[in-house]
Each structure stands twice: as C-alpha cells, then as structure tokens.
Length: 150
Image (tube, rainbow, N blue to C red; front, side, top):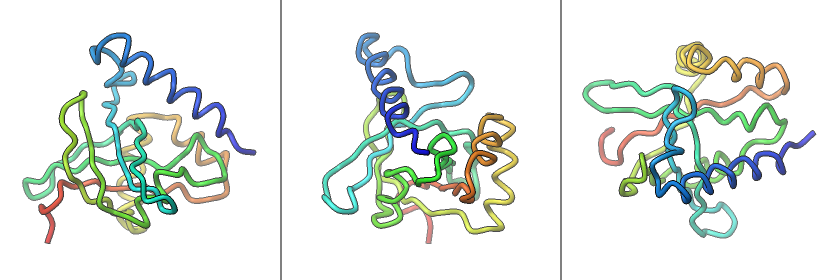
C-alpha cells in the first residue's frame, strides 16, 4: 500500500517549517542532518528537489560522502528521487540552506550496502521497521562531491 500522500504531506510541512523560520529550523530531524537533494526528473528532465535525512556521513580518502536511504517509509514503491538519480546520477545537494553543490550519486552495491545498513539503522532505528514493511531490499545511495572520484 502506497504512503505517497503522507510522504508528500510531511515533506510539505517540513518545507513550511523551513520557510517560516527563515531556514533556522528544519535542517535536522532529531540527530540526523537534512539535505535538499535535487535530481533531474527521469521523464520530464525538470529539476525535482526533496528533503532527505543523511543517517551516515563518512570521510573516505579525504572525500566526505553523504549516505541516504531510499526507504520511502517502507513503501513497496521506490521513491521518485531514487528512480531519478538512477537515470541521472548527477545531482545537487544543499546543506543547511547553503548553495547547491554538484554531487554524483551511486547506488551502493551489495557489499557496501551490507556495511552501511547497520550504520544507518544505528542512526535511525525506523529504517529497520521500514525494511520489515516491504519486500523490496531498500537501497542505500552514496553521494560524493562531483569530480572527487576517479
């Protein structure tokens, strides 16, 4: 069963909070940082932005990597942002309302997902509940600044 309406409502409420506080609030959800991810629509080619938590931020070889989870609250459907970045992995990321910077999105392979999943669940236990709600294996996406990876 799709939870599209509730996800749209929560995203809208989150954006309203950011707007009415002039960006002072809404850049974290509990202890998790929030980013604004902008992808190109896979059908429209138009920019599409969404607010996502980043349960894991890690530095590998001097490059800061942001980890996002394509959970959609445990829905059986993939989030639109995920489908968009699979088609167009060049994305932009804004943090704390700052300038949007170019990033490259990569879906974690099985080994990397197996390493990152427990870290994500440790940061937010709800991800484990989301995985139990759906038959699909929830993907993890790694965001790295563009031009930082060979």
